[in-house]
Figure 1 (tube, helix red, strand yellow):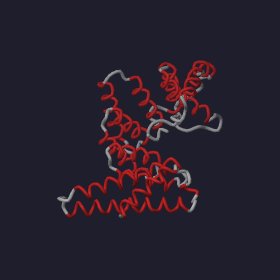
Figure 2 (tube, one colour; figure 1 turned 30 degrees about the vertical axis):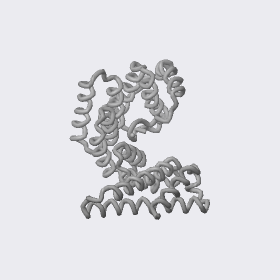
Figure 3 (cartoon, rainbow, N blue to C red; figure 1 turned 135 degrees about the vertical axis):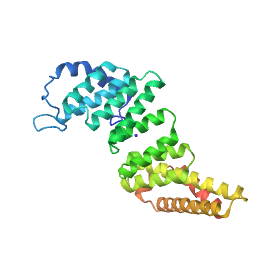
Figure 4 (cartoon, rainbow, N blue to C red; figure 1 turned 90 degrees about the horizontal axis):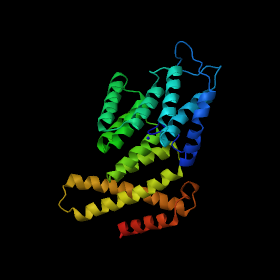
Length: 273
């Protein structure tokens, strides 16, 4: 959600974040504020990109433990260096504002600001992603799905966005759509074991749901029934492929739990009987 859709440091443990944030005041004191008269939106050869990456990571760590003051100082230094109109800085500023927002009115104001920014620049990716996170925080799942679809039209190779969209579809029991999203992730990263596991589970759920619909909805229209049959066929084919490749020891699918494969086989046997 990596400011992919949430934050680039979201793989940090709570302990790592705490230790990093505790070092923030000393780190900030040691850094000398040396900026040009005019912000430069890129890193020059005379400075370290790692330094600015450290500032960015500190913002996440400090906000995570509630050190808003240090996070604000990091943000101010990034803004002074790269300019308030830098897209990444705009995304970080939105993150900070969300973290310190005290009520629904503040969140709505931030949401409105995101809308104004995207009206001026519809391809501002960091702000698009912050807006998606905010929509989810406000419980606006349908709007978040629409926003992710728009984002993927601009950036179709964003694996994290595909994964996030899959998760939102799953919350709505839209298994076919979730399966499609995970397929896109696997096309981008064929060895992503966690995505393969989720893909197998989603196909399994999709197959069960479609089979139940075809069994129970005898009064459905022919068009609707044909659509469900097609979805069921697709999910079944995916399950068969994974089960077959697992049975011959194909490495890509060897990470599945044996219980998952047994469940998939049982469902396939039930569907064919």
